[in-house]
Length: 245
Image (cartoon, rainbow, N blue to C red):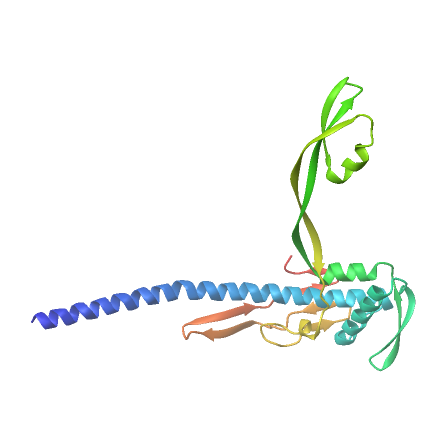
């Protein structure tokens, strides 16, 4: 009798543990899937934006769109490289690229706009260690000695001034500044494919230029048997207007 009771007790404990595990699983797995859904939606929006910018930069160079997005991408990348290497690479230019000679007109500052459009803005904290000297100078205005704080490198010049009296002490000075910079990036062929379905984005040139998500209705991918990753159509960009903004 006691053995049966013990067995029942053991089974209850096992069931409780399994229930706790399943509860944790049921809470955290959907959260992780939702995070994935948000991530891929943002990535898809980023890629569509890059495609639009590829065509936008191409029109700056040629005054027309290129229905071959990959060709447009190679051309603007090549122009950006040339403009970065040679500051005089502006105005009418010829590129020997993709087995052909391509004529472009490069505007001033093309490479800067290119870098700030496709690059990722980042920030770094720079710390500079300097030394401040506390000196004594005679003040004609106050008619007495006065203390001044100056950089150590300036002491040599100030010591030649008749009003200079002495150096009282030196103090270390830490200067912290935040600098912004761009982690440079050039668009590649992966930008033309939806990260969820791996299908190419739909490019339309009928009236202006438009990029559409290739997800027609809803994409669903089963995960962990009872859960699913879902993605709706990610929208479009038409002549600079993004449907998700």
